[in-house]
Image (tube, rainbow, N blue to C red; front, side, top):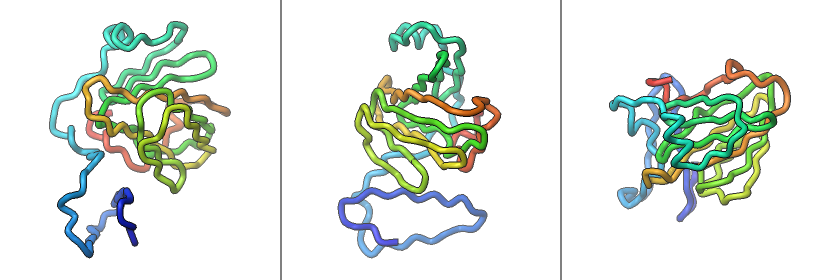
Length: 174
């Protein structure tokens, strides 16, 4: 792998074998913008929906709320609003029964879309995630209430059980 100067990169080893990565220069000055295991050893509780709605002015009209400790999702008739905590991400996943379209409403996330990674994505950016297409959203922001917000629309059979998690940094508290 060749990494050009001033570029960003992500390394995920999803195998059972250790890999050795060697650099041709000193990397001590590089900043880690997302550590998926940063919160692995602390007790995490789901986000309180009532408090969250008041603090973040969530639009009414949702029919379901899915609070987790790293994100909260509000389901509306034709879309979801997903809020992702700072320094957190959702699993790298795919779906067999549905495709998704995302619009970034707030924050500057890292988006994994197929085999590409987009860093510090601007508001209004849109991504298409066809069936069986790897995707994820990561919030590298460090401020306490600096949530990333995405609007998610789907086509096909929407079912939370249709998530195939390829890499799940939140595996320790599903």
